[in-house]
Amino acid sequence: MLPAAPTDAMMEHFGHAAATARSEAERQLLWKGRKSAFGAYGRVSPAYMVMDGVIPRTKLPFVLRRVNEIVAASGLRVGNVFHAGDGNLHPNILYDPRKPGEEARVVAAGAEIMKVCAEVGGSISGEHGIGLEKVDFMPFIFSAADLALMRRLKSAFNPSGLCNPGKIFPTKKSCVEVGPVAYRPHAIEEKGLAQRF
Image (cartoon, rainbow, N blue to C red; front, side, top):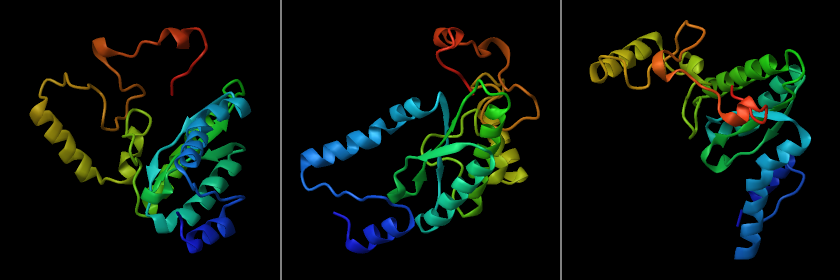
């Protein structure tokens, strides 16, 4: 159960309502609501990009304001689903990929959000890793020397470059996937039922 002070602070800055489970059944119902959020986005937007960052919890009010400002300035909408108790944020930028230029605005807004996370002392990944989507954001949290050392370390264990080629470190190439492991679209992508960023 939340003490009164945090609940009051949440309501003052962000909230419309607060609920505390009083039983296991109520706890399960609250979790169901949280887990259903991503499916609910599909009812209000044809697509969304999930961001994953982590910040110091004391910076939550500032970062949420910045996320809303960044997305609004891009002419987009955002839904925030997160577990703020450990500082993990998951802003979901809602958009329509059929509208020219909208996807590029989503990517730019996502980069700006990740930069804010880094600037307040957080990181560009709270729990889901860097992957291909955020590889170019590595300089937000690592210096050129850090990245060079990591590349040398990877090369020491993988001198022929066969393990995860083209991944982990930012490159100046337009496409980081090379050789026989190059990306192939999944059948549902080919049918237009899903998309890849």
